[in-house]
Image (tube, rainbow, N blue to C red; front, side, top):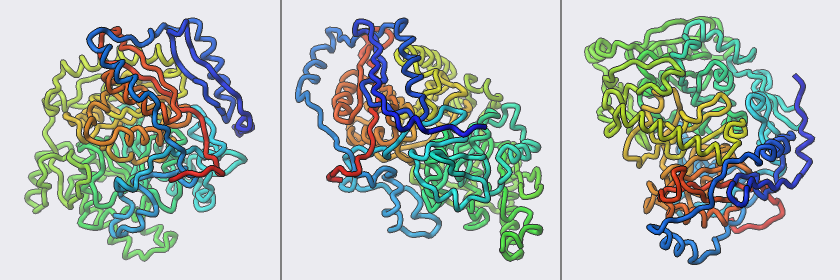
Length: 609
């Protein structure tokens, strides 16, 4: 395969495209200095120009008499927006809740210092995180799986440290990802083939996977072609930018660690969990880490462990570890697996695979007779900043089987069918799907790029039942479904049962990701939800941090809220357009479309932060 050229990154072209039919129709590549690293921006511009003549008309925002006067008054008062200045260039890769300097003030015991430690109010930045000089539009998927522009994440340390393991190679102005890993230097595909000889990956029964200590997420990257979506996580540590590389490649990932806090995922969420030499001491601390994996693994799900101590009798010399230590390590793992009612399905070469039992009643009886400690919490999904315990999470009795993917995308999730999500019935679930199909259809008329592959990494900040993600589902993209911790309904478990992925998060704090990692952000009712909970500016600045230059945002909320949002982002180098609900101007809910302008760090500039 020919190596792509980055010569286009030296070409700056002024692209000013506003799709307007008599000021009635809008979309962007709006008044921005667009730099396309690989000629992509020019081709997109051409495509939009071709389509602009037939653009569906989106009327200018109009207000009916019920709310028009009030909104006009709000819009006119203090009309000049506050202007947010760029942060200093040293903050290019700033991760507020995973700041390296702050981390070093915490204990290293049990990886506490690698957990979330967010800044106090007086420590928060109130400036715009800049992109690095030379930043370019990422490759479209699937090319992005194998190539990342060097300018977007200019860190070469992994190319040296992991050279023999085939993680990443530096070639000219791009990084190339051959698909290797510490345990699969010959490539992820062959490694996945070995796993697939035991686990039925191809038939749709295994759809969601968790990769603990993911590196640059090549395992998740190569599972995509097999219709499996992996949630990968790794700490921000000495392996600089590993999660950033994963997201630049277009692979779902977050900054995270198995330390002392529960993982931000619901119980029984994943069909498969995986550790490839992830350096997690699985048998230590009473098996607490395996017990946390057990909590998030559904009955019938699989756990894959490769690397030490598996096959220690052959490899202890190569690993340069005493065979007695490795033997004891594996003994502890086997002991915890037995307690959790995991059946070992295979141990071949350096890969061991266990399956969690589906016979929960027999398992519970066996655990009780063995004196196992059960978790006292009545809500296994109450995880935000909650301490992990060395206890067994009882499996809830939920009727109904998961259908294979893609049928499960629209099938009624068992959690909803059984009434486990209060206030959500099978009927309201189906109505929600219909509503979001209609909304997404309207979005596609406003933004013709939604189906083009331009947006790979998408976030839904207030995901509800995951119906936005289902309606926009495509092999070209994935959606991080975020369920706010203050949401009235705990729906994330049902989202996973649809074959989608997501995470719990409180938007009063920064998200566990690097800057510039999402192409499109969707915010439905989020600012109404967080009204009077925290500063609206902080949420918008966080959205700006995680949004790529020339990325888009779709806000859907009450008109009064959106006017306030529009005013604030007017000082953030965003271009905006407020449009009516698809059902017309009489509906008080409106849509605000925003696009982040292209700009990069000025290394000579001064800033207060």
